[in-house]
Length: 197
Image (cartoon, rainbow, N blue to C red; front, side, top):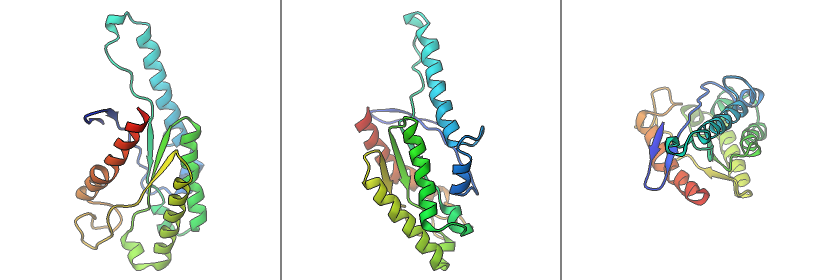
């Protein structure tokens, strides 16, 4: 999706992996269709190819700007780890931080770690709730210790049949996604882009 605010043209790329755990994401970093490392390398190659092909054109034909390089990667993961209960909080955190490090090692200047959201399952399972809280605390502390990653806590609590939640108690409603994107993440992204550009 292309978005524009007062100061920036923004190209948003989305990669959703419903049902995946953080361990599956780490194991598949180089997967041809779903790997995070693959996606970042492909985006960088696409930008380089457009720049190279447009620089060969006469100046008057170089009208179309190249796609922007990746400036920020936003990662929201860990919910399925909580649901499956296969890993402890330290293991989930290590997997999530591996995803952030992968982005940074490939030259992405900034990452945003969105805290693991609450859920209907966490509302009735104190071990799951505690695991999510511990992972979020570790993510926040790690982000605070680096200048390259920003932690964003989840913006709304779980409410059964609440306006922000779908009926499954795990996913968000259209309003929930809007609040997360427009009210919570958009100001953080704008601040980071203002600093970078």
